[in-house]
Image (cartoon, rainbow, N blue to C red; front, side, top):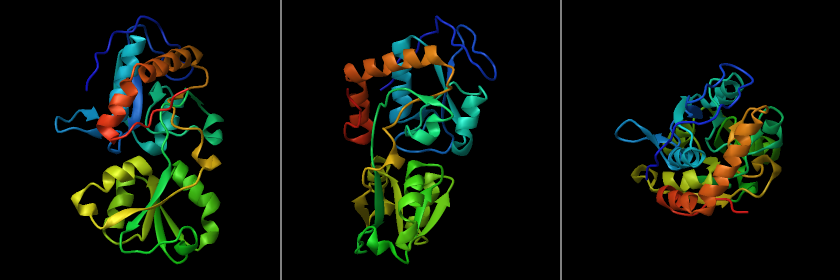
Length: 257
């Protein structure tokens, strides 16, 4: 599902980096490392996925033109603060720590963390993690949760820059278990090579997981935040978010008021 994007009719002031001029596209920051089904490259080479298409819909609701700007995950917040991108839309959880340096819109979706391991492994979590090796993507809410709650479980926690590196090491037998976004894991387990693996448990509600997924913004971009909040509400209320969620994720993960 694609959405038309219209040229901007107003200026968004940027406190840092290059200021956006009237008519300039908003730069939507996503991780340069594919994160299917949220962000990934189609056969055409264009970026697509739930969040990419939702970003286009949100921009259309604001009557703004947007461009997808792939950025390394570890540097995505510095890129925002430096003005190289105008917003982050890449499954970034709204957490207290992140809110110290950037602002967020209202949440647009929520999904918990899940543990995945070989189907044949009888795994009790967290007590059964003792002596195992667990993979987690660094700089994520799952990594924060693991650091806070699993250090005393006896598990060895290995951090990775990219989610796909975690998945590959699980498949290769270099990891016993991984902790990752549940929706992404549902999609991962549909791969032929992931046959023989399953979700073992879901992480409990915890402050590390924040308030849901929102669009990250510079703290001084109040006007853009207001416009985005209105647009997010619009695409949720008119069913666009639910439709895209069902298309890409197979379920409705949108956050309703």
